[in-house]
Image 1 (cartoon, rainbow, N blue to C red):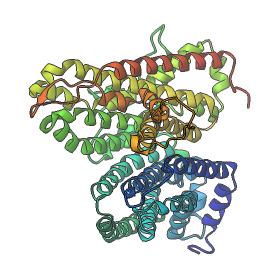
Image 2 (cartoon, rainbow, N blue to C red):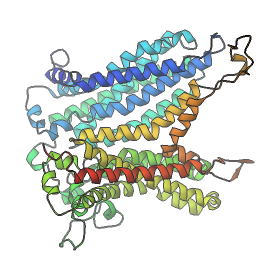
Image 3 (tube, rainbow, N blue to C red):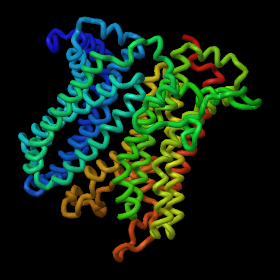
Image 4 (cartoon, one colour):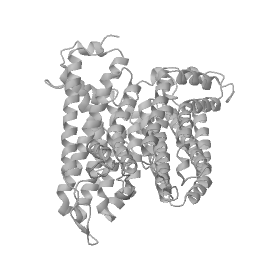
Length: 563
């Protein structure tokens, strides 16, 4: 009933693994790994294994950390909608009324959601083993690393399933899952890098701690999820479409959102008590007052509390004790917006399609520009205000720490990068919402595009500098014929130049290159230049303008109106 004859597991596996997306994702993943091995293979005619073990170990670390980060990003996308999907399809109560035990439902949902991700990881093992002949890494070290990776994936999946049992919508479950998983993933990657000089010690420490912690986490969260299914608090689908916000505020534990007070009214305005004024955008008013908060403020309260809790140590270190590391705190703020921003815009148009109200909206006298601008500003307003909650320590630091007084231009530049990034995440989410029919597909595509633009370009730049490092003059092979008189030219690094230019679209690269002209311990910290910052601002603003223009054109041509 739990594994071999689990109907939930069998049904989910048949549905998920037989889709075309499953085969396409597997093919794309294998092609990507094969390309990395091909280009990262040493480009010399004679390979000294005793001298090149360090480069081989760096390649192994790149593979493992890359897959670890991908797994931490992909696990919530597979598991965060396991139970919320049932609630959204109105089949949750039917599942609970079945003779299945709650534990069997939890195990079936967990194994089914992670089966495809586990398949991706296992199929990458033969490609990674091709790097073993380079030396520097033993077979046992490789197998142990993959075992740790699978344990981590199972833990991330259980966290996502627990969040899925707690929330009503997949978007809320997905965001909270990311906020819980990413700090754990970052700490794990940091420990892996810190112990990188001693592979044996690293694996010994991780094998002694990770499995025990993961087993305890999976067991406790599994018990909690099973109890939630046994005593559900969210049955009655007809009465759960809209939450009574006043009752929720009375029963809330911890942070309470007061919609009529500052600053809560900035992202959760109170209910309208009078008619809408003339010349106002009715779409914006409707979105900001009802649509975003129809499912309550639980997700918002958790997002604010978790993000501020994680920001406290970063704030103290990066803004006050080590102010030269201020760009890293700004990077955390941008990462928070990347996770939270798309949620409030990715369902703007797809929700109209799912409710079959898009045709009615387009037949009104409201222009496409007003519809799209109202949807965009409503989502941007919520995400930007939530992001601003993490920036008030910067304003306090500017007053208290003299380091920022001589770098006020850099502080303004940081705020500019964050503001443009907030607009871009909302714009990309709205564009994906226009292109797709389902909110879940729109949200996942938005995350994929944002991660590729903002993070993937930096990862590609790091890989190219590792794989296409300049060849030393002693390693250049003389392939000239005796009659040739042309001088030998060193190997060019066109790929590294291309990858460096691609990082111009990443806000993280722009933050790190903003100059901080100050003497610390006798050295100037981060001299940088303004080229990357200016280029990022220009490219991003231009991209936003193009996307908005394309969406207006699509609405005027009735893009995907008929069903």
